[in-house]
Image (cartoon, rainbow, N blue to C red; front, side, top):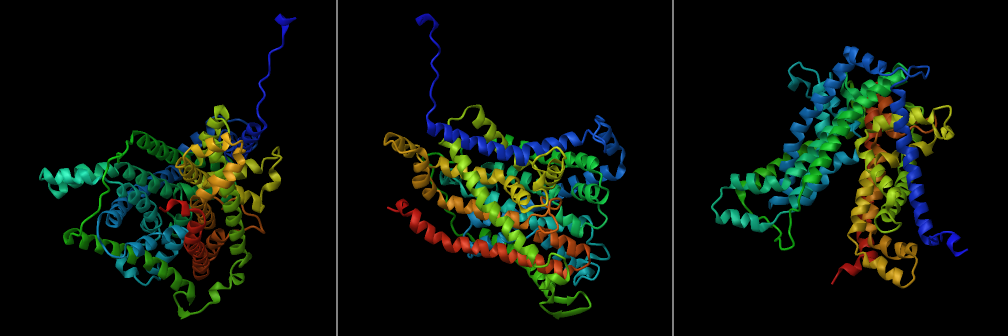
Length: 562
């Protein structure tokens, strides 16, 4: 009988089963909110209107349609031109903040963040007030029109600038002073030091900034919709195919074409990240800039010029929101903030956006941080962990418009048991969580990796459950990062247009979509008023975060002090 003994089954501890169950739940959310919708989008591109497989017929029709080819080219060259303008400008601004001794750096950093807190439509509306057919400064265009590529590029420069500047500021903030001292000892000129020391340190930041700006421009919907005029781009073509022509199959094809530049840029950024080596060794000496007028005065002038432009654009939008009837009656009034006069949703659109953003911030932060902890310190990895980690990085390469279209095709499918979610707040919350998942995940994972694994080891040796260690140690220590993740989710969900333009219902219209509809109806002042209101909400949340930062630090970070 001993030779026929049954194999002994290894008993998995209950705690490990629960942790693995947590990873399974995270995987289920990502499958429901990302993988299955994108799979449906891919399949729909190879089907006709009746659901029959037609192979590459839709793609052949796309290539044979001149207007669609022109839209693809327009998207690429406007994105490239915007990148060429933004990246050097952002590099100079970031260089001033990190490598100079100019005064007012805190103010310049705060002003730099203004476009991040505003919907992308706000700069487009402001430029119409300045350079539109009845604009105050239209004479400066010498008869040319702001509606089209000029307006798109100008508005995108405003919208994309802080994204590039933030990346480059981080890249330039790490420098070894010994390299500069060695270069000076060798009598290298300032230009050569800049070319051989400064630029190599920042080159991967330059690649990342270029990739981010290019992707943002290619995939943005709000700016070309408001100020693009008759100039076709991929983002507006997807909207036209789906909403205007109800041609979901061609919309899926255009969506996949729109996905290609984003994936290419994403892969380039991943390659650059893989080539990057550490810029600071353990014996590095932090670089501290010394005052030098020949450098500081031009950089101060640059920061003043850029900050004036950023504040000016926002100021024009605020002024436009108070004008009685542009351009015939410039009397200031608050009537434009009576949104019930201009849109069926009225003020409820704003509260709907707040509810969506708040739910996405709370649920998304809880999901993202818990999942990141499970991957880094909790459940054993294996194939399940690798799958979750891989899918968590995908949303960064998926444009919001493509994700929104994928949601429409997936959740509207007759065979989908989750079809009841379409048109509800829940689908908008899920879309917001998935759309910005990657950045939140990377932030959470970075914060958790900074913790010594000894915390979990000590807890395990004392027979303390991992979940208790997570709640009592990991969460309090990482609370500043958790707060950053929540605010990031709230602000981005509050301001996004492209990801939700297909998903709202009669009672769930977000404020950003209401801005588009008001502008389409010719109510530019009301549209500006709604955009300014969104900016006021996001600024308030950011200020609340800054105000609570000191309290959070006193309550949870006192251990960092000597």
